[in-house]
Length: 323
Image (cartoon, rainbow, N blue to C red):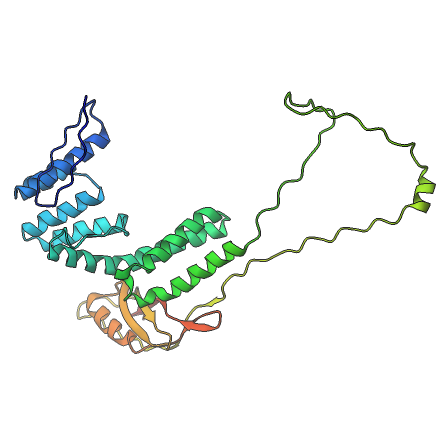
């Protein structure tokens, strides 16, 4: 049976692939993507969405977004791109092969989601490092740097602290001494493997009496203990709040008087001022607006990395309305 070379076409062209043999899950996934692309090219957007079904591959998410945009459903298109970036943060759309509106929405989505993804990967890598899973940690730290150096992330100033920390961890692992080899162990009376060479037993002169040996032999010199090289861990001091104004909370008429709690996430610059604030957990919708506005005037002692101020992010718990 002759096999044809695969052909690549642009988004606007239909693709036909003949799959022979028994049906399988991977073949069905590929088939749904091919059919979805063909239906998109025919402007059958609803049918394309139906065929793509539960296909979770990156191209499937991309074509869902294309279909939703063609149907005027921008919010659904953004949701498809969020699903794409969450699983495949390194995925890149080529501007020459994609509509400008899709490229713009995809770029905005990546800039919004990737910083959080990078922080999660860094946290996992640090856990692996502390668990002595160095190879696994190294791969994740290198992935963090690759995402930070992505041209689309150049404006993400809040990732500079992670870049310094990640570089520090990689330098530690690079300079760490290799594990010492296990000492060779000889077991008396053990049978030798068939492949082991035969070694003749050498003859020795008569044993010297212990007293004579002590008189003529120099005292043994103890071997120096191997130097222990301790890896250097970057010194990180978290930000400390210096001035904090929390607006008062008054329950609306008819509401019971009780304590309400939530938390607010703030990004702190190297000057200790709050660069941005957002609710991590809502206290009360109307109060949240006032709290975010007040948080932007808070002052911190900035976080320090090896004695140098860095940008940082922290979550501040808030409790109001207590009697």
